[in-house]
Amino acid sequence: MKKPNGSEIIQLFESWSPKKIACMENDPIGLAIGTLNKEITKVLVTLDVNEKVADEAIEKGCQLIIAHHPPIFRKLSNLRTDTPSGKLYEKLIKNDIAVYAAHTNLDVAEGGVNDLLADALELENREILEKTYHEHLMKLAVFVPDDYADKVRIALSKAGAGKIGNYDSCSFSTNGQGRFRALEGADPFIGNIGEMETTDEEKIEVVFPHSIKNKVLKAMLNAHPYEEPAYDIYTLAVETNIMGLGRIGYLKQPMSLAAFAEHVKNRLNVPCVRVVGNTEETVSKVAVVGGDGNKYIHAAKRAGADVFVTGDMYFHVAQDAQSIGLNIIDPGHHVEKVMIKGVAEKMGQLCSERKLAVQFIQSEINTEPFIFI
Ligand SMILES: [Zn+2]
Image: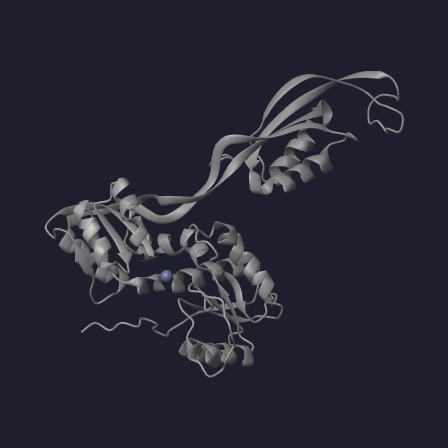
């Protein structure tokens, strides 16, 4: 087992929940406080960072905190140590505790906040509620002398090209003749300077997501025997790596809105929920958006949700939901606490697979500001 530094841990985290999938403009994600350039043996996972959480990190010997809500949300105009937030930053820095925030990227990520909430609510046959990220599929067509076709094909699939759904190493080939004349200064693999050459070649076609274009090209160029390989590369009108905010799925069994409200309370461990709608109505298709989902009532309605579970519901938005016939359950914003266990377990698994000796500790501090009387 190897003791990792902070950057190695965050690299793994971002292989699961990359910054590029964040869906809020100027979302202050990433390293917020301190440095990742140090050895890390204990990471505290929390929904929020407040002074009690900082004390917990100190007490438990954590060198890094991974939080869902960014501890510095608005730009600072000063760094006074006589304000509550200033005192928090001072404490974290004096104790050499780094804080890394994964906000809307963790909401969107597969297995992130919204999937964890959908898991907790036991939603089946789930889909994304609102698409917020996709990549275009690209195609590479490369012309390779027959004897080298296997080598190039293997290199392409090792680089991640040719993955379609649950299949990998997908490619298509056509055979034909390549023609060329090497000019002065060339070092031809086949043929001689100044002479026309015709050779049996295979045209290999593969698809891959735009984000791995450079890796795929590099692999092809390294495996190809020619000095100047001939290839076409183009963007397809096919989307891949589709991700988004919120989830929509079905309950195992339809139930009344009143029974579903009880289910939400039990499954998300909250003492009460606010309900909009007719409690007698039967619900089976459920949409969920962690945190503040006010903006998504129409997306939930369009997607055919019988009920929408989200926090921080405003009075007027609740009235709008009522007028479009959408039932709402508001269990509060703090239900995003499901990420504490989810992130700690996922990161624990990713790090142990790579034999990194680091422990992910689930924060036990309750950061819910509301009490229910
Ligand atoms: Zn939130």
